[in-house]
Length: 134
Image 1 (cartoon, rainbow, N blue to C red):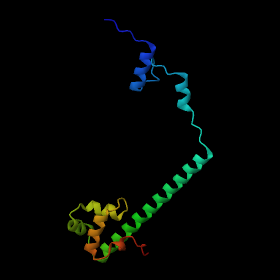
Image 2 (tube, helix red, strand yellow):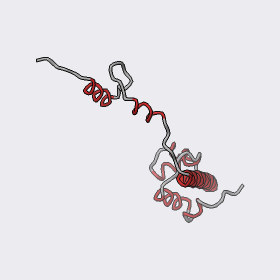
Image 3 (cartoon, helix red, strand yellow):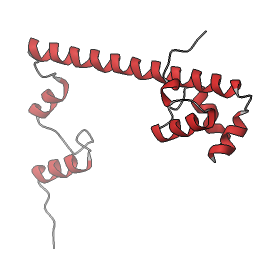
Image 4 (cartoon, rainbow, N blue to C red):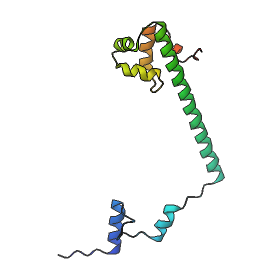
């Protein structure tokens, strides 16, 4: 049995496996143009896009600021109680490295974890989101 492969079959196979540009897998002129041309965006769409990006950046800054407040307050409260990171980690049954990550603002503790911290330090959960005193 002889297999006959025409250009359309070759093209379809090339698209399927992502080899459009490989030798033997030509792409059409239309596909070539669409690959490098940017779609037209109206002024309204552009403004909406910019506004959305602005809101996202603002939200990211707010989250980062809150993470820093939590980290600073967590460290302050731990030191006020004269606890080491290891002692707090043992109380919570978590790795010591987790306490370090929380205090370095690399990770934000979950709400239940903040509640556990609040119980250990005998404070309200809102104490963690207060502005850090310098």
